[in-house]
Length: 243
Image 1 (cartoon, rainbow, N blue to C red):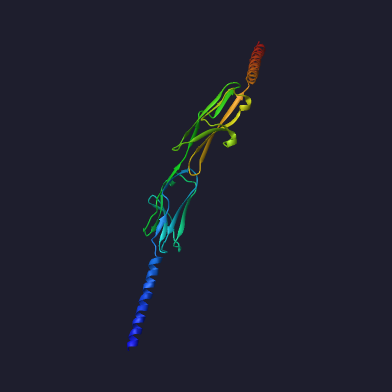
Image 2: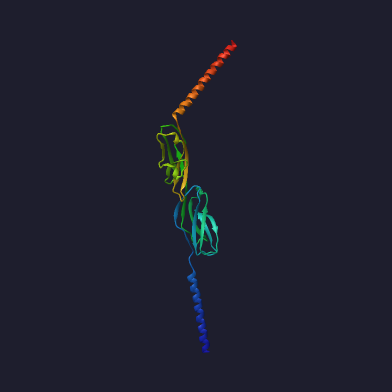
């Protein structure tokens, strides 16, 4: 009888230790749901694409993952993975895509930091889109940019590549212009968005030789004289016919 009591006590203790061990493992394996995303502010160029990313940790399978802008839900997703990287991709961003972006779980147990997105643009203006001067004169055009960000301006001939750069000023000035200076010049502008946004405006510059102008004037003068001669000849012939 005593042997049975000792044996029963042993099994009770053993069962208790097993329960305690399982309970300890459960506690060790548990974790709190959280979302990793750095709080930041991005400037995105009008028409550009951007991608945001949230890292969900220890997410129960019953939870829905959400991307939100301001107070509106943009994208929902469910997963069986406890750890999941959730991306939001926006193409051809417009003004309506500006706002506060963040991730959250549904039910709303936890939410992430916020990324502030501002969609911006830059507008390029020139004092004239077509300039015509004589050889030896100065051709001058001024360019301005309107943007909430600081814009970088330069003038390029034929395009806006670095090798086409003429100067780094807002004013294009061709002193003592020659015929070979004729061509298309571009006011090139960029602003520091997440991927630099570039805009440009074309200006056509024409440099004329003075003798070319004189020749044209001479041709017009001769045509004018010939026209008057023909007119008088017609009048005289008409009068003679009536007489």
